[in-house]
Length: 327
Image 1 (cartoon, rainbow, N blue to C red):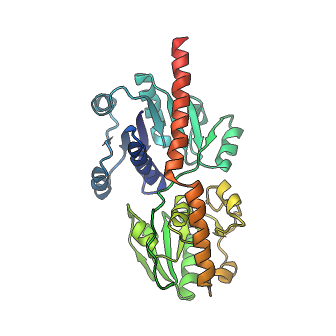
Image 2: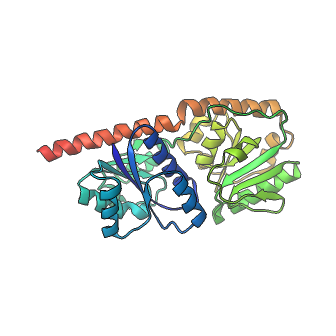
Image 3: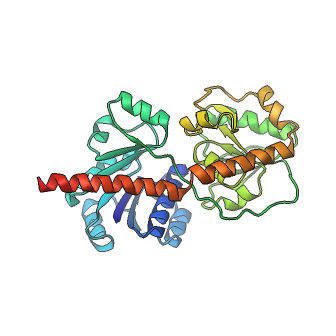
């Protein structure tokens, strides 16, 4: 299958999701062309070039049409991932007369534009319910992540925490309070993303977070970061605009419904509540949480599983489109 994917560049998990999707589609034998606009980050542009994902960054329609004819002739479907590129995806869908699919990562999409899609994909049950209130039917396909085949083991548990997140002003108070609490409790802290604070080793944006995940004993973030932590066998603390705390066998179903966003509890970070788990943590219990997360991620969050579900949606849209053309 030949798939066009459209998105706007953001330094967050949405962009990582799209590039990982491209890579996995290619691995499973499909052809892709990524249209990624507003890519004004030279290091990321170089990294994207190294991935060998065919891509273009122009938004000029004439140039895009030529690029598609050259790089992905006769595409079958277009899959959009950003509210900013939805009008462009609609235009290209009409030009090439192919079905249009959009994955809703955040509820900032124009409902009228979503109604023009041949299929809408929600990343969580919470998202599906909110779209339903707008009169939009969607399929739930949770975000998938790469599951490392083998995990290297450390001999010592070092009380090392990793903040894996892009912090917005709405999240800053929670991140500051949790950082200061962890430092008071003797944790060493690393950050991958844009979070910085005195006492934190900040790496900035990292395209391949495997190394920092491997060296952590606790991962703090939301959404994709939580799924990645679980894939790497690390206990995860859900922290964003709200704080849902540690992911455990008892609460994972509820936290998954809101895509590990913190919106399940809608409570701010509480130092007193966190101290129960993190001031004097049991290495054995924390490692057991990591093992549980790894098993769950392997069964439910693999990118291979996600792509297979997406391809079924693509095929359904193509079948419906073919039938409509015949009539």
